[in-house]
Length: 133
Image 1 (spheres, helix red, strand yellow):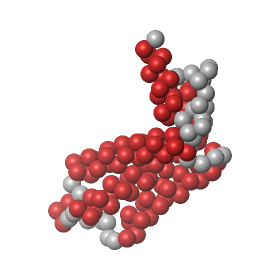
Image 2: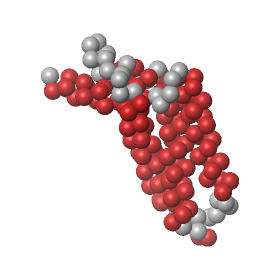
Image 3: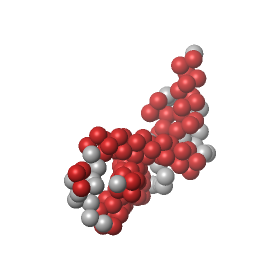
């Protein structure tokens, strides 16, 4: 079950990263994109979503109930949440490294609006500084 659980976690993380790339591209959040232009990011996101599922389901028989070695619903939920959280953190780190030159301190807004012209960590810094006043 350990390999099955790890494989499920990895599949969710890969697919969720792809979903985040598609969402960021459609929303115009250029600071979260791994590649440019946004149409390439949508393509990369689609490939990641499909790759996660194909690798998970094509490697071995995954139609196993929880009594015969499959994942219990509670464990599956925790792994899904952990995979999605990991994908979000991975997206923040990779996109900030790729877009490290994206910094728009003047008039870029705060929160998600800042991600249109700034990487995640720069936008976070500006948002936190605006909260402090």
